[in-house]
Image 1: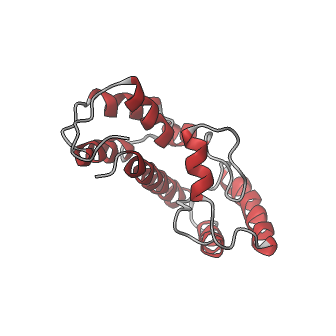
Image 2: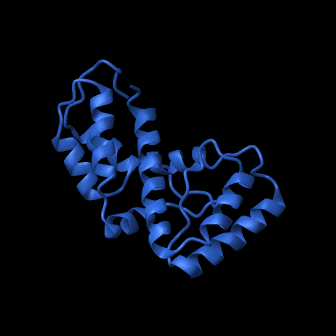
Image 3: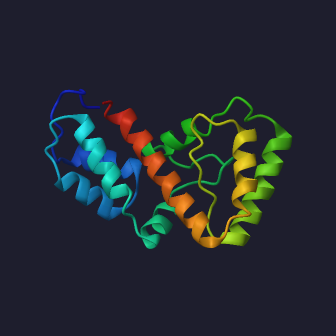
Length: 165
């Protein structure tokens, strides 16, 4: 979107871009209201700061916009395009892995009462499954911290694509 050296100003376009990275109203408002940013790097720093301060309720709200790992995001907005690209792994057509991930998703949702969230970009389905199984063993507090960290990482990766530093 923006040139790396161009100032980033508060605008409807910036707010839409931020919402596609993380669908949390406070995140969008605080980052946008901090503009203008002289560089994309300043924008990223502000986004990282706000994304690192999400409440449990905000994390839960954001998860409502994320499809399950292995499921195609519905719609054609920027957030859905991000999700489809992030989940396109080389081993995505492996039926055995798909079944194991679906079973893991169900076990995770029963255990933690939320969708399993992981930064899928750059990870194979086998790596995602291994992490899913590892995280099923975490206590509630450790998993909540992991989910918040993964959500922040996803947000910042998406923002980097829209506003390269």
